[in-house]
Image (cartoon, rainbow, N blue to C red; front, side):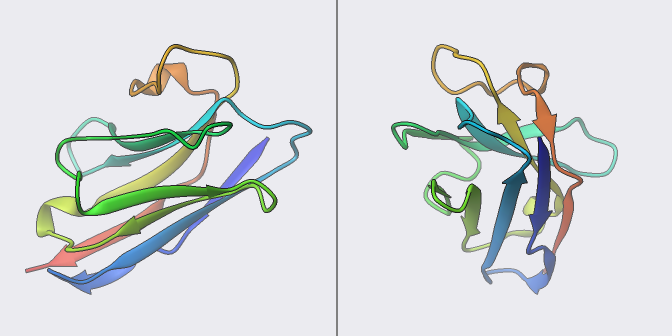
Amino acid sequence: VQLQASGGGLVQAGASLRLSCVASGRTDSPFAMGWFRQAPGKEREFVAGIRWSSGTTHYADSVKGRFTISRNNAANTVDLQMNSLKPDDTAVYFCAAKERLAIGIPTITQLYDYWGQGTQVTVSS
């Protein structure tokens, strides 16, 4: 399975960006997909996740109400709509796929099986 993330860029605070992640090379649907981010000098952290079959979502407290994760089953894509961006949102954003059944939507990096290459999001003040 290969994941390709895109849509990052440089924006001003308050602006919006939409990230997209395309999955290829799979023959069945994942259990869940997630977006993580990693700022310089910090650990990779969970941003948002979606259970593929039901569409159930889960968000980090820091992005609730501003970010929306969605998936397109037919196109095998998962998007992250980011509104009201803040300088603290600056990071490399990664999409990830979890293949096997789990309880809830995992928020720990080690529980995801496949990762995309990351896309840079920079928010200026």
